[in-house]
Image (tube, rainbow, N blue to C red; front, side, top):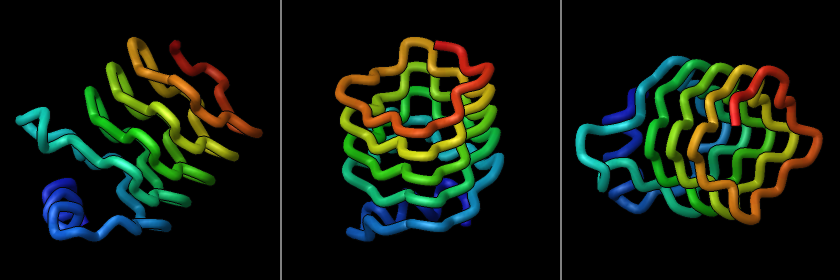
Length: 112
């Protein structure tokens, strides 16, 4: 699956994408409104190295997600669950981290 299909399926009402491997995929679209994934289940997803710049993931379940080396610059992660998430080397510059649940997450080398 690529970013375009993820957006299409989300727009069709699907919200459970747990366990997907989208390693290195750019799910950011050219239009900001394409980048809205609110209350989506991405638990266990592999987004290592993906470009999620300015993506809205508010309320997303990212438990056990691999977000290593992911570009999350300006992303809205408000109220996300980042339990046991791998954020090593991730770029979180200017990201919204309001009320985020960080538990046992790997943040080594992450840029905040």
